[in-house]
Length: 255
Image (tube, rainbow, N blue to C red; front, side, top):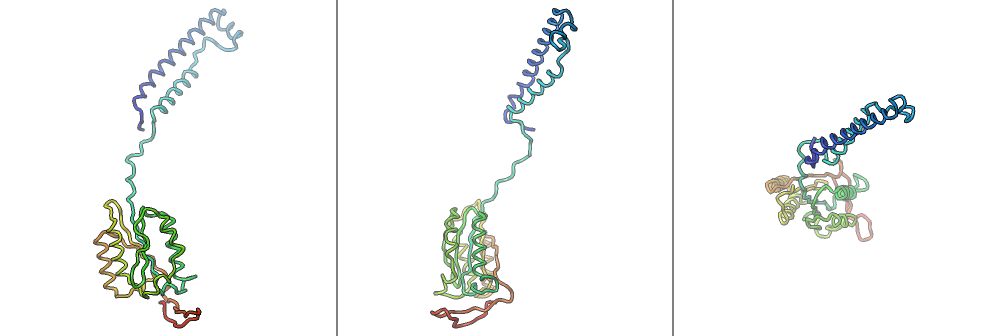
């Protein structure tokens, strides 16, 4: 047990002694009153109680009350040992795949809708102290810089669509987005934080596995941790390219 004000513990013996002496004085006075009334039997008839009996219960309760008050005033509490270390802050860079393959419907309603819902849950859970948001297909685009205001990222989530980058490219450049995430975090890096890159994608990497692996190694060397959230099924689903009237012009594989 530890105390916030151990200096107040000296009050306990002083208070206990004072209360004991006070009760003893009252008891001796009661005995003199009993003798004045003609003895204990006569005093009991007049007062309804024994004036010569020592008030042990009152003394015990008084001492216990003094003990409780002293412990409360001194801030007594259980010693739980060393306090837990403070949580390490996390800087999270989220990279969301908006390539055309994310429109596949092998998961309902589509890969992109599932990925966007996952991003929404990450933002709402407040798992990071600072967050950034990037979109990527065949090239990465930084939508929200590293910020401690989650509301900024939360604002953009409902407006994200796979058509945002389709006019310029149709690929999934995982290596480029990993390098892009390293650059974004390095611009506002801090020594006490753990940087994390969260990739939300269907995993259809263009450019080859060795390039992605090399980019991942560069990110790890820079201090980033890479988390991945895969969207889709192994069998895949057809992809359609629609014309101006909405009718499908081409069909491809989203495997």
